[in-house]
Image (cartoon, rainbow, N blue to C red; front, side):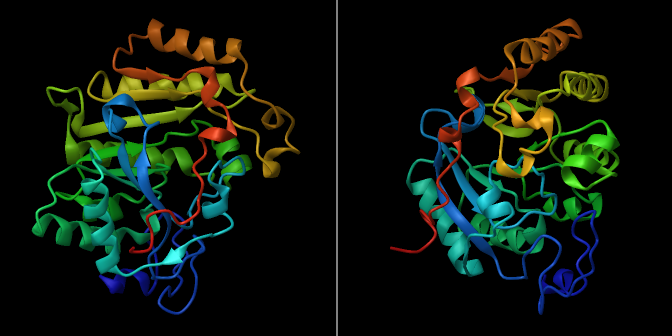
Length: 301
């Protein structure tokens, strides 16, 4: 699948960089780079369960939000090159540690390589769900590569307003692209299916991080999800916004979300009848919940 990297249009940026020779707008070449592979206990309960989600954090990002909590890998590009064979090994190592699933975090710019790794892993007998954990800023054509490969989609829907997506992510077309991507994702996996232990086996959970000072935009996002997908998906309304240095000069982003702001969004979700949802405790808005990107699980012992 190396041909996809020759003139890269994997994401909506469509930078057309030859990533076999240079870096794309995501900051990455065609060589897979990750910075952590470990069990993660703080995803939604139907994802983490008691034993954890097997997260693989990929380096680079096509969106680059100024408030990103994973800035060390999305903006600073900390990470180690690994081979396709090593990525497959990591999947099995996570399963051996008890992972309920393989959670691919920000993998969009490596889609062809990840798709091939999934094929190899499944051919070798890996039988736990694969999760696509992304910003939602995707091309529907690229998502087609995931047909039959990804079991659970875990995208963000960050903004409704193009003004906000331009200011905070440099992506005026964010909602246009993300809303189309979510519809495509849903078409690939269908309604959520949970097993007898309450663990998700297939389906979609859409995350929305409520930003301080922008509750009205959050209300529009939540309404859109309800009107579009009804009760066929889960909605995760997040309270974990943590001020980051790049956002410190923007007044509303230099503080944390207030209880009143978050409760207003939750109240709206209840009022419009969202029943399949997750909420967060205020303690989640802490840098202690940001993983240490220290190459845990990357190199073979």
